[in-house]
Image 1 (cartoon, rainbow, N blue to C red):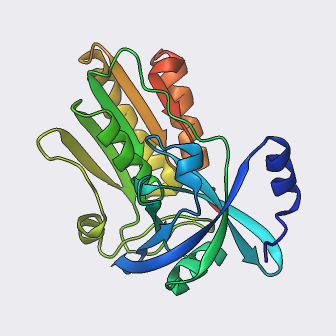
Image 2 (spheres, rainbow, N blue to C red):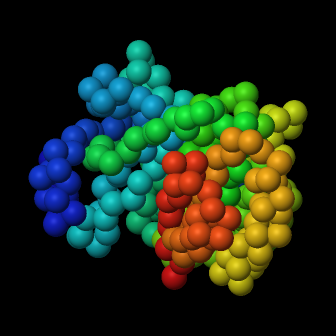
Length: 260
């Protein structure tokens, strides 16, 4: 039986969002704080098509109330009608569902608002700022914009404990946590710069500001992609547009979670 989705679901329905039911076919732990769930799509990919960084809204029961979170598709296969979702685990109903997910379980989903505008002209260099919550989208982005080289600032907690109250981050020891995460970067083209999460993201902001201006000057057609917590994303997006003067069409910014 389909559950009600509250006022958020009603708004999405007015916006002609499409609803589907996914079925779990398997699950695996990538690290102690990162879990991949495999699903069938309930006909979604045939109806919507697929594009890089495509995401869906999953609906969870949160003490009797609907709770939605967005997740990026991993390895979508339209012919087979399958894909994966990756969950950075912490406290909360979404993580609880992922931890317990087993074959045959179902989850309701809504598709609305997801798109991908390929930069034109093609980037000469991609500059990406993300964290474990946005890692599936980061992987998809770098695949889509290949063979462009990329510089990636990747923020994670040093001690393995999520620094958040909404959907977010993983880890064991800092370097080991990054080694265990499902990066799909190519060392020949991608410079991944690990940044410990400190001072609610201020350390990441400082690291990016120290390096990005000179890097942008050396790239004739740069593209900047920012997907961190909402506050950090807003700060960096404003910096890149207003202080560095990068045109809006040469960047994309989306907050992936809110710090508690």
